[in-house]
Amino acid sequence: MLNQGDILLYDSHFLYHLKHSVPVQIYDGNEHVQIGIIARFNEHFVEIEDTLYNRQRFTFISRPGF
Image (cartoon, rainbow, N blue to C red; front, side, top):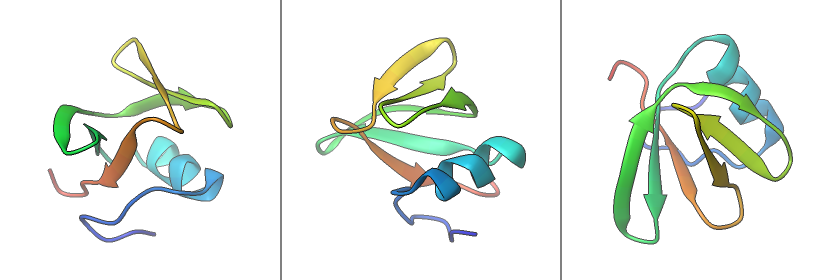
């Protein structure tokens, strides 16, 4: 489990957030893009609110309790 503000890096992080519906905050560089629940993911992309985000381009931050 990650704490609020921790960066999701590994498949296990994304899987935990998916299984437990823990929100994630998405950043493109320093710019906030979205907050939402992971619908699905693979090694390249994360789907949140019907949008695919490239795992190499975007940063995903844990937001439990949001």
